[in-house]
Amino acid sequence: MNYEAHLDAAIGRLHDEGRYRTFIDIERRQGKYPHAIWRRADGTERPVTVWCGNDYLGMGQHPAVLEAMHAALDATGAGSGGTRNISGTTVYHKRLEAELADLHAKESALLFTSAYIANDATLSTLPRLFPGLVILSDELNHASMIEGIRRNGGQKRIFRHNDLAHLRQLLQELPANAPKLIAFESIYSMDGDFGPIEAICDLADEFGALTYIDEVHAVGMYGPRGAGVAERDGLMGRIDIINGTLAKAYGVMGGYIAASHKMCDAIRSYAPGFIFTTSLPPAVAAGAAASVAHLKHDQARRDLHQTQARILKTRLKAMGLPFIDHGSHIVPVIVGDPVHTKQLSDMLLEQFGIYVQPINFPTVPRGTERLRFTPSPVHGPKELDALVNALDSLWSRCALNRAELSA
Figure 1: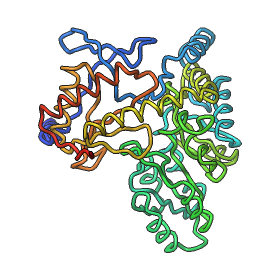
Figure 2: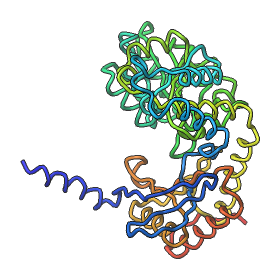
Figure 3: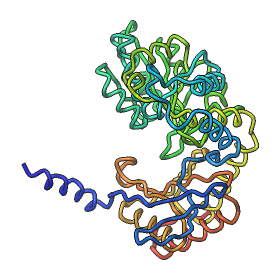
Figure 4: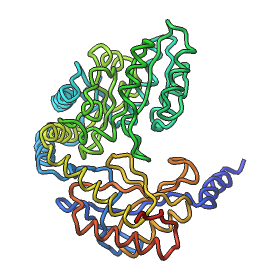
């Protein structure tokens, strides 16, 4: 067996299809986000503006977050010391879980090292708690949800994206006494569209199913206290398990579920992804708790975030650029070809100092390759002007399609 040849072939296929992923070295500067330094391979440096980050609100450099992290680091040192079951549970972890339970108006919350692990560990464990469980999953759910459902060994049904009629059909085909769970997202990150939360909850009530929602791209940004779209729509009480992240709007790291005390206790006790993983460093937990607490009261930051997203979409529409607008803060500009998408990304970086990663298959379907922009409250008029002018120039230079402009 020539193992090297197999590796060469696998990597070569990605190059041939134009979807080989390259990373650039970015150094964020405290207090300067979205501006950063790009370190080239030859050692030279160039200032860039980051337009694809998931630090949606700029909280990764907020003074309250940094102060809490410095204090915890000085008090406790770097690491947690082990798994939560051995020596890795600290007052900082408990404080963060209390903040998250309060945020979502649930009895408890359970902290994981990432939202990916939270989804994977929870969804793969639930069939052990509810024998015969059938999970009904939206076809566009995040890879972490898909992986958790795939690994759990239980039954699953996949319903077409946001298709309530198809979901109803699948529910009707199941025995009335079978345990069921509907897993879906509040905001789907590649198109920025919303899940029909209330209608799914209605179906769950009708057919006796549990509900599991991923609010990763909504927590911190939607709802009067930043608990997500379910809070905005007054539906949190109808969701059994809420998944969220601390690595996007909260600007730090980590993931969690919020649910009843019994549900969190069962997942804590049975999920290998929780039991055998070293816990987050106390300083990270402290910073996340400070961020969650701050955003419960900072509506002005949420409002400015939405305003910046609307401004960008308005200006893109005026130029006829083909972007998707479902009313969320995510702004995908469709290119439709992996090679062209990568070329545009490279030209934006090299010629304009604008950093946005190309999004290709398998993250999105073939033919829908895109540049995904995430405007934030700290992307001001100067940054918006630079981005819009650069896109206008490149679209013309590369002879890419524009939408028909209405008179």
